[in-house]
Image (cartoon, rainbow, N blue to C red; front, side):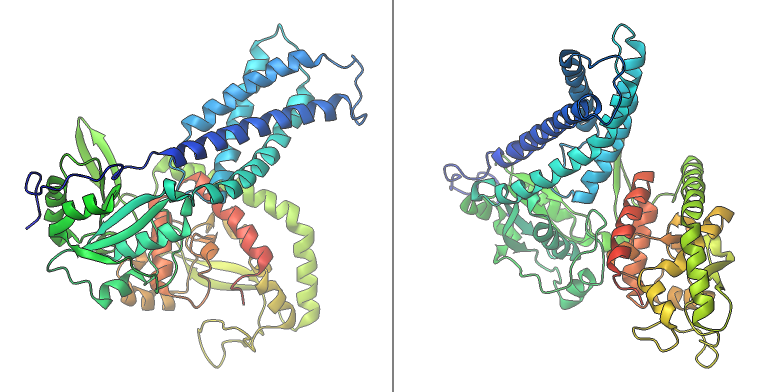
Length: 506
């Protein structure tokens, strides 16, 4: 039986149960300071480059610095407001550098439009339009450099003992393992698990831990590590939660219990009444075969969404417009490279330059996916449909280079323009493999609710080729359930990074 308030004579030890919050305040203050300093540095550097470097003509003479300094203060206010309201200074713990870069990019674009609008309406002041153009080009570079510096400093700050959120875990659902991984991979969360409590009757078996290790995603949809994460010490059962919180000076209690033990949430909440401690509940997402849950409030009633439509009609129009613009530009800019690749393929081995293969796309419709040929023409004559392996003898010499850097995928830009594919989405498979995977993974076909992609959330996390189908499916479902244009841009940036490194490509 859980100890309730009034049943224990122990008082909370002095200074226990709450951290000062100094760490989060230091982090936010540092980020704001660095952003403002970098914005001002970008502004002054642009002023020097435009008017004093000698590269640009200044037929009307060098304008006074004072007017530009005043304009710089306006720019600082505009950008601070955009970053603040877009959440760049909140929910910092689980943000990666890539998250920050996407946020900075969107903020710079929006800030540019707002400042240009102000310059247009304030006709009493005349500023060089070329100056503002150069400034907005340099702003992203300066802000990116600032964020890198700030994150390096914060790595030291968050390790202060006084900044740690002393965390108690209750329960043993697979989400416990995922949370432990999260605290290890994102030290900025500053959560320090000091122990865990067992829920009577809960089967914390190796099977549940295996489910946690099966490739499910963390709360932000990133790939978590494998098994072997050390558990904090067991501090007893849930009946002693109030005593443990008081004795250990706990700041946060996180419940990772199964849906069959939901009553524990109520019992723990009652047991910790009148104690200055936070309580949070992490739903057992693997039990629902989903990657996340959304909460919205209507008329004071909370609605928890377990599964939603992949994309709204407006989302599809936005995504298609972006695909056409980006893929069309890609075909135009990369045409000399593609012509060179075609010549090398023709000279390297007999057979056609391009290779077409039927793949299953949106709603199970098949289409012909185009690639540069990287294998012999008789590659599957004897074996039939099989996965490509490392050092596969069927791959040609030039084909090995193309596959390593994913250059064989470039013709799929034409598939994107035609509408068969998207730049970003679940990678398409052949029908024979889809039918096989559907037997292994009940929700596998749901990834076909959107167009297949040249790259995807699974691929940028190292899941290419002959890798875990369950793990890849969870990543694809996470993409469907969390789509945004910003996520597509982020995946494309991550793809470029992985392509340059040639990771897991053969």
